[in-house]
Image (cartoon, rainbow, N blue to C red; front, side, top):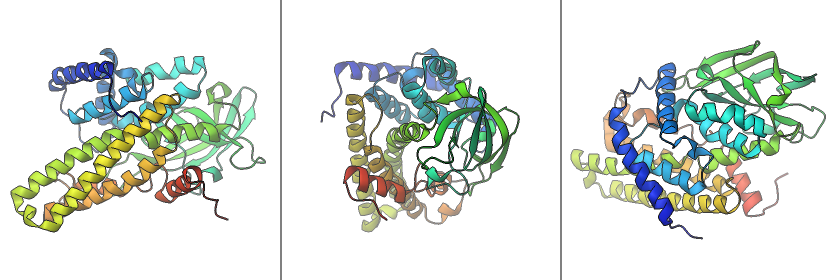
Length: 377
């Protein structure tokens, strides 16, 4: 497994690094992190800058190694993250690029790359979270459209989205994994109701989504009818395999900041804390190497991440929580002040063992698909 970079890839890195150094000082001030309409405008504005500079394509129309370099360099430079359109850029877009027709790629990919359209994710339901295949939102074929009725929950960025990657049941009589289809839902369609959910940190990046006989053109189906579970596995492989790469770089940078803060406030004198930070640094270094391995594997097999993404996601989720627990130890009483750096991120980290597939689900995937262990009864 070759984890080194070619001269061409290092040239891409150097050009990107120079562009970031010139462009980042020109950005406007960032909006309030809880203002999602403002963040949509800011995040999409950044995406338009990337597009105009020739970097907007990297999330799906570039080699996995170039994507890795892009995420590494933008995070190290402190550039804006994909933010409000992470579903479009990291989940739906790559899925359409891999599974969509030529017409679908022409319709949906360029607006995401330009920052013109935002996507949300309509997968989980009140009774189908970890057990996603038990979803009950129905889509009944009526001529050239599906009539969709049901409810979704934890719909990421629904209140500012133009489109939703939506899982529906198109054949209730088929085995549950075989009767699902993947649709692109226009969020302004009649019958769509969005009800934002407020998180522990006060943000509303999640929402409930209610669908009351919403008509979705059959042409908006990605993949064949009732083949949506396979398409969904492609989506989840991107979500678990590469979507968190930039955050690993951010966590490694945060470790350095924690060490500096601990030296300033005297907590560095605690050998147990130093040992804890050192263990975390080794863990994130291992995660970075695992990321490089997964990217190399994806590059050799057509660009779609494999089951190694589940290994990464499982370990990263817990490492991130441990990192922010260590941050609270370094901050001491200041860890209760939500205006202090890292504290909102600490609250957010609590969701990582649930988001993008719970740790229990990831362990099952690792056991069954990587280790070859028998399924539980």
